[in-house]
Image 1 (spheres, rainbow, N blue to C red):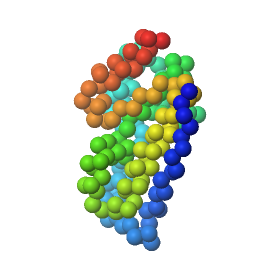
Image 2 (image 1 turned 90 degrees about the vertical axis):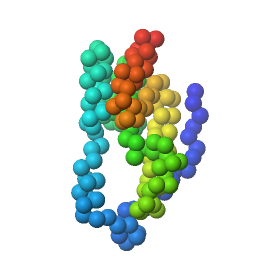
Image 3 (image 1 turned 180 degrees about the vertical axis):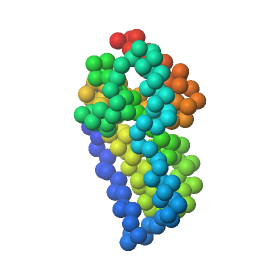
Image 4 (image 1 turned 90 degrees about the horizontal axis):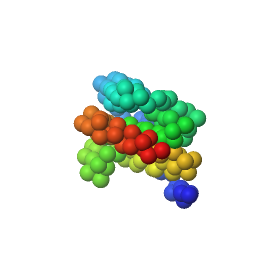
Length: 155
């Protein structure tokens, strides 16, 4: 049985000019094009999983964290996380953020904290949680797929 999550939530300030944050029109346009679901790595992983004979549901909102891929009967969920939004190599990347640091650092750290909370909740419900970085899927989709298939073989 996993322990309860006790960490205090990180407070993320609102991204408003009145709070001292700013954005250009070109940056705003660029950020609006970033997808939250059905990203290329997600689609390619789902296709590989389906071709391997594994059936699943996508974006299951009845589970904590709304996993990208879930199979409740087989007891696994998959999240495919973007490197920026979920803090890949965070100790190094954190120092490279130049604009609006007062917003982005707490925002990403809160995302990372929420990921840990979600993992604990799902594990306490009996699910096996897989988290893959987008770059992992792009570079070694078979390795990621094999991790899920190994779980299914062992069940």
